[in-house]
Image (tube, rainbow, N blue to C red; front, side, top):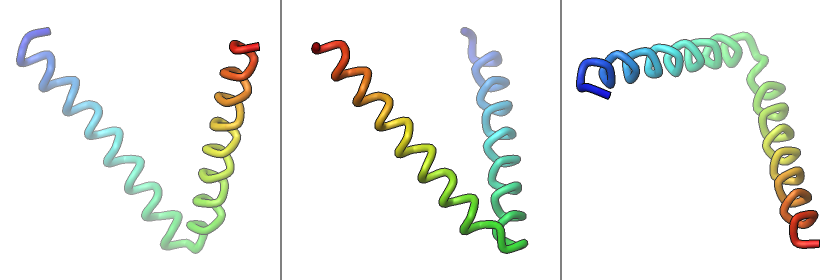
Length: 60
């Protein structure tokens, strides 16, 4: 990947991150922040549990 392609990719990723941050800010402003954060934490816990279960299955 040349320098220009890398910069274009980085710009695209940063644009997506910025859009996500704006969406989160909007949700927080509307009072939906607590629910959103709780859902994110629940999703993270579920992913961790699935990962641990897969690791356990592989060892068995």
